Length: 104
Figure 1: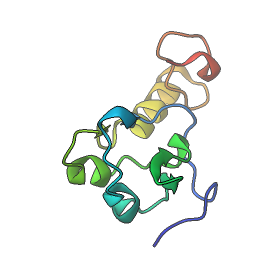
Figure 2: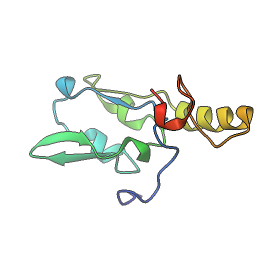
Figure 3: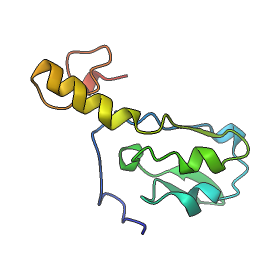
Figure 4: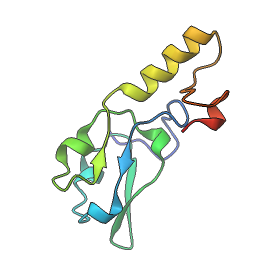
């Protein structure tokens, strides 16, 4: 089931998803396999709609034959939740800054 853009977001700015458009051949397999509609096609080019929609299942990276997508399956959200629990604050990736707005 595909979700509508903005419908199922996870923690902000913690997704490990990386897209390298220079490696992309616009085969659209990522669009077909992504259950949350992270990718879209505009002017015959694949783009990322919103990284915060990514649930880090890894389907896009596993199916991309050109290495245009990388993702560490399940790392982002889990890391953000654990960091929030350890610090007693809100879930945040806290990778270098004092707040989630300063995340890498």
